[in-house]
Length: 333
Image 1 (spheres, helix red, strand yellow):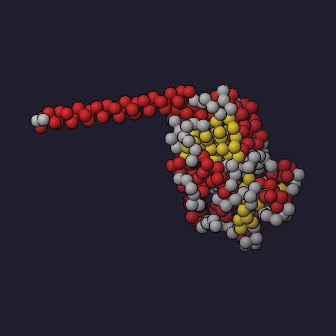
Image 2: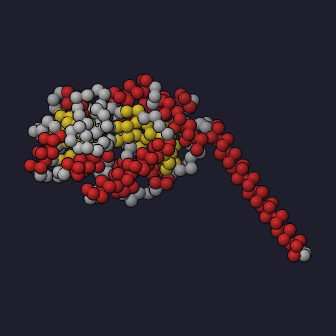
Image 3: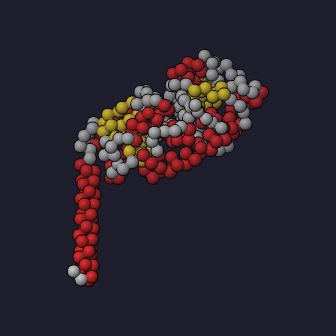
């Protein structure tokens, strides 16, 4: 074979191999698109990494009750609590990215990466959409002799190390909100971690812990009974049903706008059309009047957004929480 013939033969072989590879890629892409077109063809599982009845669980069930009929498919809620949501997150991270497993999260999901060595990476899960904002109120035990945030700060400065603040676990958003409050008001408080909301409320009512940053749903009924005090709200504007309670900014801490939120994640590699469909459907669901009312009654604000907006929120909050952790020197055992 001449040198020219050899080159020609090699080019033909490479061309054939390239054509075969492109054809295979095209078939794979076509199969992915086809699978997305057929989706969902079986029940969808949504992992809630907390116990039933908590904020994440409530938000998820309200939304998924509406989503199932829209997708004409059963949606199964699976509660997998533990390790500040990382147990459920690890399960979701290892799931097949076929559009049939999702993870409902709070900010603890991103906070965990700054505090723990985890069995999964941020790249193992991808954002889908935010569902709700979970703004927090500052609730204080009745026996703490204060009526305003300014009085609380003054009391803390006159009684160093006397105040304690509760949270549902190391690295929770309530933990970091309390730490941020201490930093910004230049006071010292002791963090007390609990395993759930019920024991926090019991100790707050019993005066065994001084304060907590918590959603409105359960504690506010005790404020109405004069058994707790609600000093401020962490949102940008006052809460619609509690217009007499000032925001933290109005109470004297400029820029103190924070809170929790609930959103949905999917295993990395989940088909983009599936993620887009989920984001679009959920954004429409939270606009429905009955869903909005259920959210407000539970102390949540519905959020109708996009996947990109949720990804930006997570990135911004990750940076902010990392700063609080560093400045407050927060570590976990």
